[in-house]
Every structure is written in structure tokens, then in C-alpha cells.
Length: 169
Image (cartoon, rainbow, N blue to C red):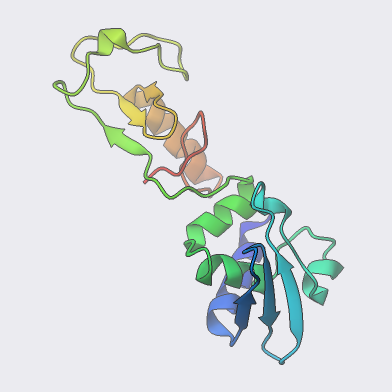
């Protein structure tokens, strides 16, 4: 999915006057757009990338791009950041409420008890300080994390855990 298209819809969701009311189940939202027309936004909580809206923008684009109404609901109801929405729509990554990056200190962990780095399959050296994901508890070498970070930046994606795709801060 084109990040620029997603960003346009986020910008419109933030700049235009939109209102919404959640239903009792928390998955369906009645949204009133900028022209006063009501639409139904349905969030699929098991996979937010399958969320849908009854507006013409969403339907005409054959659901390739999410509309400003869905972006608005994510921003206002779910309190997601712009980066969370772009990650979901461009990568299919479900946003998380936790931070992933945790640099360990020598006192924190005995590296000889860790599994091998899942990126390079190499073991950790005794004085090495690996990065650990707080979601999946995988440990990574610093150079491996740097390569992954560069890859994410080249793709204009937010950095996530290379294993579980949890949000990296």
C-alpha cells in the first residue's frame, strides 16, 4: 500500500470536521463526515487491516486504501498514532501498546543463557549487550538490529521487532 495515500487520508481525518459514535460492541462506529452524511465504520478487532467503511472513497478504491473515516476512528477511539496507522495499512502490522526496544546491561542478563540471535543465528558473547523485544523476548545483536533498522528506513516503514513485528520505539 502506498504510504503517501495513507498519509493523505490521515491528514484529512485530522483536518476535517468528522464526528463518530461507537456502538455497544465497540466494533461498529456511526461516523458523520464533513458533508453531514452518515457512514458505518466496522473495525475487525482480530485483524484491523480488514476494517471497512460504507463511504464511497473506501468502496470505489476497492478497499485498497483506507478512508479518512477509518483513520479518524483509529486516531480518536483507539488513540493510535499516525505511525501506527501507516504501519497497519502499509505493512499489515497490528499496533501494540508496548515499546519493544530494551537495551540490556551486563547486570541484567547472563548472555550465555540466551538463545542464538534469530537474525544471524550466532550466539552472544559474554560481554555483549543484546537488544531484547519486550513482546516476544527474543534477543538480537546490535549490528543485526542496525541492519533491520536501515531496511525499515529504506522501505519508509516504522521499525518493528524482526520476529513478532511489535512496535519498536
